[in-house]
Image 1 (tube, rainbow, N blue to C red):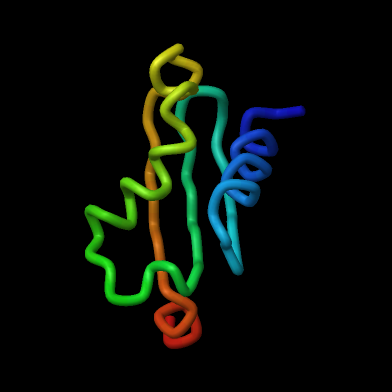
Image 2: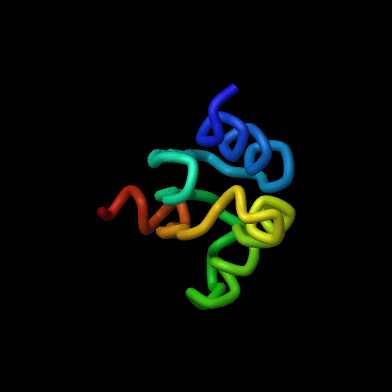
Length: 79
């Protein structure tokens, strides 16, 4: 399983996401996540929600750089 598939699977298990896109290589990952849990939550808190399940991969240096874009379902529909 590739790192992008591993991350996608992990985030799906840990966070109730409506849409999840994960692209990149072993060190640089781009994540787009959509969920109603992001309603009325600021950007910092949204990123913390995504980072939390990824911390083991960051600590062991499997992941180096992560770009995260988060949207509520309504924000995604209006995009």
